[in-house]
Amino acid sequence: MHADRTSSTRFSVPVDAALRAAGWQPGRWDIRQAEVWADALRGHASPAGHRHAVFPAAVEAWAEFGGLHISPTGSGRQIAPATLHLDPLHGLHLARTLGDLGRALDTEVCPLGAETDTHSVLAIDAEGRIYTLDHTGDWYVGPDIDHALTTLIAGVEPQRLTTRS
Image 1: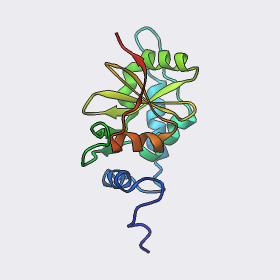
Image 2 (image 1 turned 30 degrees about the horizontal axis):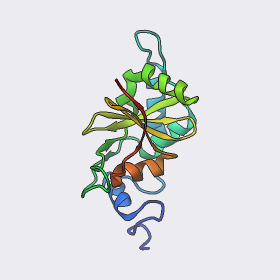
Image 3 (image 1 turned 60 degrees about the vertical axis):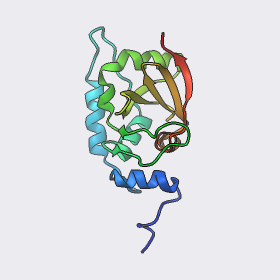
Image 4 (image 1 turned 90 degrees about the vertical axis):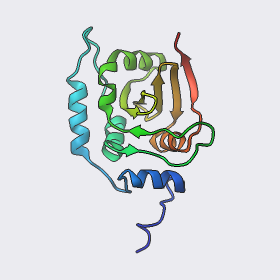
């Protein structure tokens, strides 16, 4: 069948190509690794006692996309495409920061990975919305993982939530 070799309709062709080059394919599901990350995050507390929230939307995103190193090619639509490493342990030491963002958004927020070129941390909330946090502020990237990956890989500028002083 040709269906496996052609682009899925879930993502645009360039996004699909970048994901597949990183090792993703439709149906990818590594729940064992997702549970390892969940246990590591649940078991970590900051020196002040802040803990990570772990919830189904995060575990599902890790199971499907966790561990991928995504290196888009080409230029972005508005900004440079993001080089991503989808490993929640990039945010292990940000329990307080992510907790603060969650309180501001009236939800829980958990790490998802990092933009490795900019050292921005990717995070997901309990409803599956995606954010990035960097030295300039917090950014809303998309209503779900698919939109967020498209935004980041295609180089679409995210929406600023806050500014860091």
